[in-house]
Image (cartoon, rainbow, N blue to C red; front, side, top):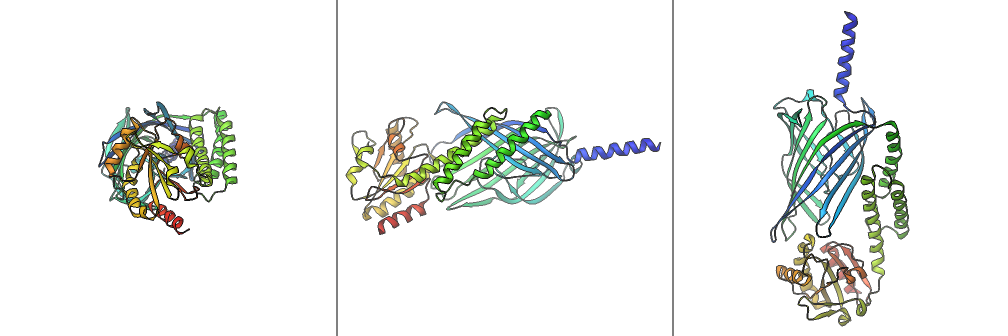
Length: 460
């Protein structure tokens, strides 16, 4: 009798351990789903975009007391009808799952779980608790910090698997500040389905919303993310061994380049070294079964490095105004020639009709034009990357924002002028001094920095 009691106690202890952390080394959790974002504007029609999501959680090491070391691989894809191609985005994150299931990651630029598992014995209908937490968002650059309330809504199921349904939401709106910009997140709610037997997250649905009160064009973005656990497996020893080489390689690269080449303080030599490293790793990992996760991430970082290489190069350009800038006006009859603006400081604003930030900056750029035009500054808009009739879109843009500064149209498909001025994205603002040298170059619109640049140039 004592023998059977000991066996029973041993089994109970083993069961408790398994419930406490239902992970093991080499385990792979595969989630699939969709991210749907709706953009609502105050001045033009709203639109919705969606992207498919594939997420793998790789358990690299596992300790029943200390938790698990994990890597999270995320791949999303969205069809871009304008370009007739698929846009791929991926992330490779590294972090830890604590013994209570909570996860900690190195980056917020991906879909992340608040916890990977939760002990089922903690859950009962009507249970509720709250905590101060940092929330990681889907493809939003800033983490949110606020009071979060958890509530067990009751029993449910996912594809026939019994689950507990848990809700998680912010108790009040959160305000975020990034440089000159302020964002308000009034809504954040998650619904999480917890496997009643193993405690693993079977399904996650997240709905959050934000808007920028500083913007003259009011835009509200509402994003709904839904992912469901499709498969739990343990990798073969040879596959585990391969990942033990690939993922540390990816981690080394991520730590070396992620977020470190985004300022003009970076030297040309540092950018060259980063470009070489990324190019080599892309070649090494292109044949991996996980290439769909590695390559888009590495290519994005490589694109960032090359972008900043061009930004370093741009201020060195001597603008040959006569040869590279003679474009038609919005009526298609006249021409704007920068060679006619000798002796003037020229602020070139490259924009696109469909671009949200371009629409946000237009009224403020008009104010700058009115304030500085009597000081020898000329603002010239250049409409590029049209999605339809380039001239019609430019005329609508002018009318919508009441612009009075001259606007030219770069109707060529490859936008020759934009290429000459190293324009990577819109909006881009370039200031050409009286000496025809590019004195300021900025992708995006930072009004304070633009005004400071104009004032410094005028002093010289």
